[in-house]
Image (cartoon, rainbow over all chains, first blue to last red; front, side, top):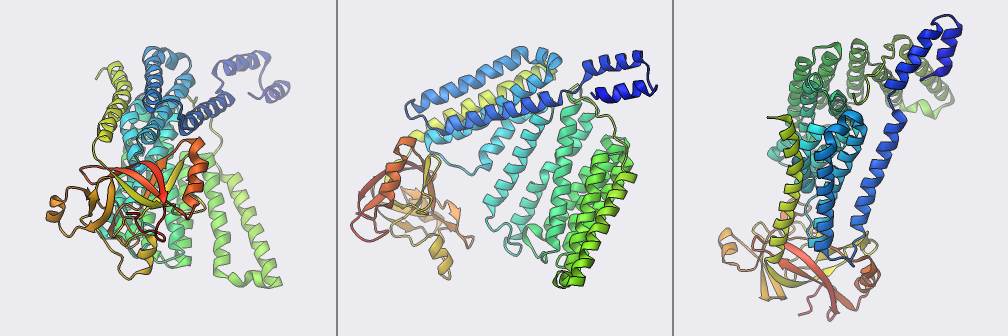
Length: 386
Length: 181
């Protein structure tokens, strides 16, 4: 809480001493422990990494069976603690439960590596990750409190689908190779994480763990927008022929994103829900359009601008300040890059350099003005975990 | 479902799943035939990464591998895998299998493990063996020694998959990838 501001308001006569005291008391009881969250995140991450490196150190002195038994016993002990004390912890210290869930899940993930080391098995990484999602996913979805578990789950899902795609088709990124059926299947698999967004949007309004579902929805949303932006950028570089960038793959992506967007808008009937759904659907549409304009730097550049202008408009509608400013920055950066793409000789002469510099400054100034003048006001964030 | 019961089941699922996975791996580990296969470190500059060793199998009698795939017009493909010939663990050669029927007749069948650069099924090319940290330096020196041939003892399962078990060395008799027997 900003004590200086509070005193200034009191001095200016905006609030009286009673109100200031009440605000202080309320803030003390409701403060979002951001630093605490960061410390817990770093601490839990350090424990997880420590566990991984302990396993990787391959203690030859201890027989593999004993090592595995200790590992499983540790997991069982943590599981027992969650079963016995989880509910009480969830009420009193949700961040404590979040950290324990995270350590439990990471410890479970390292068990796969430990088994592989003990039995000299090696399988493509996506297989243990997919099995991990199947085994630990239900627990994280049922008990996860905030971004730590949401991010662990979502990042693992995304990593697993892409590792699966890369293992199934080593020539994945060569856009001319690969058979149609395989590309169609892999495009569907890699787009599937999008479907977590409507699920999270639906549960966000209906579950007491709003923070967890909100983070999961945001992660899936960012995945869709990020992937669509990358595809549109790639469209400016080369013509999409087939494979994972072909029309079939882009149509599947587009269809899945459209369905996810419609479901989000249906599940969350608020301006924010409508905006999320629209941007999700727009990202899908951008993938299909990217195929159409691929090979043309100008058309792909314009498509990128339209996509992010749409995101800015949606952010205005929903009142997302940060997203609006990010969208304005993306549009400004793309405009600058586009101008250099269209007139690459700008940098070769003195006059050209001056013009280019002036253009960069003008776009930056305009972006700053738009970002300041139009950005929705800061809204107080709902409390992180309860 | 009762939320408390669901939460409990969600906790039991990973524990039971991991225990079952361990039991399955243990049972699977005990089955199979052991063979000795010559290997090469596939990148002399990066034999040891962390505490495992990576190597390339040199299947005697099968022209394969990255280089062959990139240089040759049509790298050899193994759509039905290969048959191991010799008296275990002494591997004499591998024979390319031509059909599913030939595969059924082969007692020591090696399945195609991965696709080569042309996208065709190929014999397992790369392997990885977890090793104790203390042994890493010695193994690396021996793999780099031109007078010694690395041999991996591996276990061949009924489904044609292989698991490396140990790395040993024999004096090298003929140049490069020739089998010692």
